[in-house]
Amino acid sequence: MMVLAGRARVLGDDVNTDYLISSSRKKETLDPAVLRQYLLEDVDPAFAASVTEGDILVAGSNFGCGSAMEIAVTVVLGAGIRAVVARSFSRTYWRNAVNNGLLAIVADTRGVVEGQPLEVHLDGTRPELRVMTVPARILACEPLPPFMLAIREAGGLVPYLRRHRTLA
Image 1 (cartoon, rainbow, N blue to C red):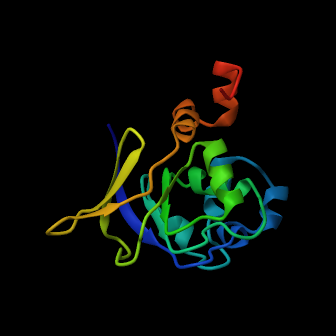
Image 2: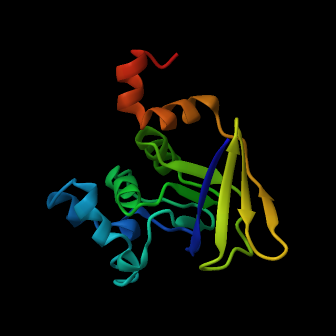
């Protein structure tokens, strides 16, 4: 069983990729260690500096909508965030998350509050989001496809293909 623990960093609905990182930033560098400082800079210039390793992004519907910039996943990973839990994801963001090893979990996130301690428990394909309040609340999550977990465990699609030489 894998457990990711961190605090909730709550965003709303329709967080588009240009909010996550301005498309102009991809011209400067692709280094995640540098990109991390630009996470949500146009929405909240202080946000990136407030992120700590292990924070969990929690969002509403349609997370990652907009352009299909892979850098929008890179900036999240570069900031030390290993999971995003949202009510729904844009198809392209979800696929970019899978390809780059970011855990993208679908759950009803209403009621999760900024700063709350969270734990993502992953046992097989059934993730569980635990809001570590008193009493703790457990939020059911949609199951994850086994191929997504295998790609994530390998560190992303490219490392997976290097190891297995096939998607089968």
